[in-house]
Image (cartoon, rainbow, N blue to C red; front, side):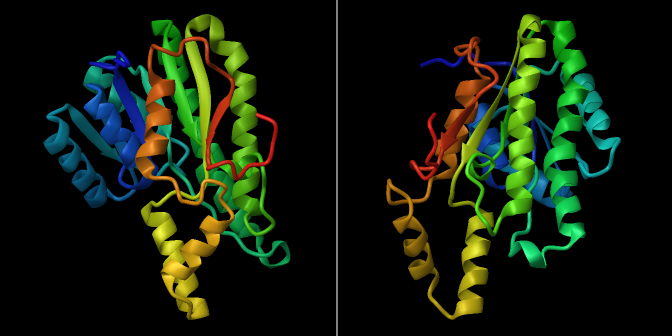
Length: 263
């Protein structure tokens, strides 16, 4: 299926690695022009270089820390100056520390909401004026299945995710008449650098092999495996396309049926 993404301008946060980078690669393969942003300029440049080599596409970068309140406006202005429009925003920045509730200090809760929630809210706000003037736009936030089914050891991230799902649902109603759709993608365990690090840290702490720990987690996934980043990226590209104009205010969960909730 042609997703009709050729020459669309896609702005992707958290684009230097993980699901942000995977989404950027797929959007470039579909012909979109990219603006990538992340904190680490070297990693971001490497990601952009790899995407250019693979797709021969147009890729611009701007290194910013989204915790800074003015960063979102600078990123949106850069994208507009570079390409003259913003058709797609993919929010993929932010991860949160977990632990037992009684052991988590206020700083961890604040950090989770600053990067995952407030940074995303600022990015959406920064592009909405542009998209409303265009009378078109697609906003996709990579949230996480913990926003629908929180785990007791991941409450800071799950709380931020739940708040983002509320924004997704509520704001979509307000901008639908402007031709803008807002949706979320909720991945479960996905074989990114982040999950590789989690498994390695668990292995170091417990003395158990990484493969044994991975297999234990996969036993709790009905499909029996972690997702690949490209699977999640395909959901992002689908929601970013002009093929789905009437899908808005909702989320697609990509977790192998881990989430036990009525869809």
